[in-house]
Image (cartoon, rainbow, N blue to C red; front, side, top):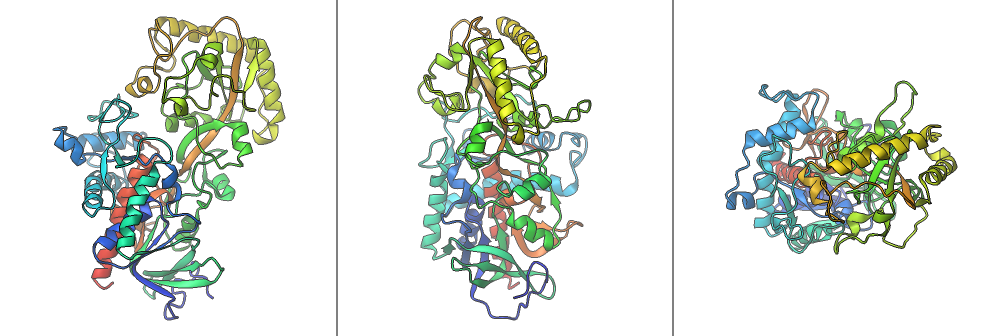
Length: 557
């Protein structure tokens, strides 16, 4: 059979094995939102899922989604002005382009339109999915805060709404795995609409007509048989990123990726398919970043259950191989992890590729408050000593052990080794940090000055001027582990427009081809606006793509 990714017609007159008004590829929240939306308009829907389980990475997530100007904010009388929100989004997404005096805030027209669509269609998407009974949303509560935690960037001047944009489906709580409630509601809705959701079906290519419009896909079923599926209104791709394809990760990402919490089926299928169909691509160097212990990533062969989201402890720092701090340890994980990719032009290497988290006996032996055990990780629970942990009775002994550990892992770090001056530099770094802690002011990185940092660093001892920092104890033992870049998934790929249509190099839509979620270039650019940006983008543009594909079917396209 002809390769449909190489031949734009791919013999469209041949027999169809399956047919629907809208075909959706991927069953994470982007795909499920697309499917539910199309089904709500009376359209027949067919969903192909490559994996054995329905729900993709969304099932593993916290299930939280970030939606500006949502109806819960409005009901509480909280304004989320469009102009201010767009400025906030643009500043973080494209900091080198941002110009508040420009009509498009300094952004290219399409990228600005994506931000507009996120703001304009987000509340619409949530309300529609609620009205049809697919997703019942609410504020995402956080301990005793009914409106949830403060936004990761609550302190940014353009951010007019530091609380209340985080939403969660009913039934779930904000922790890993709660995305099952989000997916479960949509799945029940699709079953009532007689929509077909087929797992273990891998889409291999597009089928296009003589005008270049996408009219279907070729898909391999569990037996390996190739099927042709007709899509009368269009195909919506929601197949995840490429974090589990080492070839694509090494080719495109800005540095080495050591692990991902995405499902292992996220291997960049749509990136290849769309490029062969003439789609333009963007943001390929980016992912939804985080950090993980190096040895844990190697042990799990890149398939992670979690990451270091909110580094625990007050007498705790992160240093590079020179023994110096290079980042605010309490900054949001997506921003903090990007410190790993700093290139040293003098030494011609990425000296921060491995960062070393160091803490003292007090942090190691002090239990976390009830309910904070997942925030504490990867600092192990009191009394536990996982293989990735490094311990020294003195700083000198700790430095020696760190050096030995790095030497044993040279093959996985590009040959990184501790600087000969690591120990004296570390001692000076700790001395400087201790002075900051005593004075309550981090003059290097401003640690502990934002609502986000304070929210995730509850005080574990009394008498501190800054609850996120305490002087290191003068005697050991001291603990450490090696941290490397990881991610939820990649967030670059084919470009879409504000209608979730895949576009070519001239920003022209490819007829019949829609997409959303981590398989496309993120509307957020390099930013993680706050918790739920990943799922928010997927849900919103999945909804928009499903709606437009359904309307196209209605119009007899």
